[in-house]
Image 1 (tube, one colour):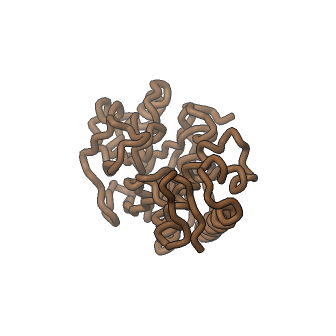
Image 2 (cartoon, helix red, strand yellow; image 1 turned 90 degrees about the horizontal axis):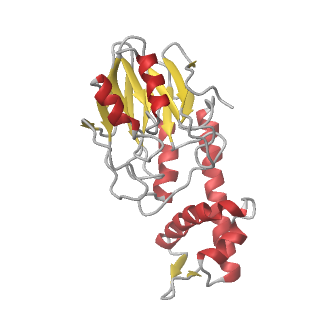
Length: 276
């Protein structure tokens, strides 16, 4: 069990506080990172939990200048509004183009763009647009130390759920590959511990997704036509049935990708049909 509220020093420029919101989708809780020594940036302030916000304010001690959100799911961004009110810091992020499971309180002072850099007195954070998990997902690269703050683009210990329509499997796989274009030594995920080998992790995740896609296609071929409830039990045999409702979301994202590529289609009864 993590020591909620207690900061952990990860590097000379990075500290982490874990929010007390453990669960099946959040692991031990949401990682909030503080970057810098004098002017601070908070990355993914987390949920609106008073004791978590108090811990951030205690650690920040009036030095918080920026609040960066990788995306606007309720476990990552709601604390931004309270932190802004308490510190006057500027909120950075992007609006979602769909309202599903989004933090409706999110209101950035700066709507970030791809490859835009936020400068501190001893750090630079480069925004990297990584749609897939959701359309407004950005990773932030600490250029001085080669650490990418990955939000829910990459998690340690669990698989990212892709939720259409905002989530897109094609975008997700492309975004995974894209971060290999940057000089990255460590991945700092939104949930779980630091990941030391970015290239190996990305290659593993891409292989996992493409392997699952092959299983979706083979499963549908064997029982076509099929609805999601029928298909999920043969595609996700390695996932506990209690998580099949979440698995159906990512499976739908796979099916939409396969439909675009001409391998499957959906019939008038909302059943998925193997085409070739």
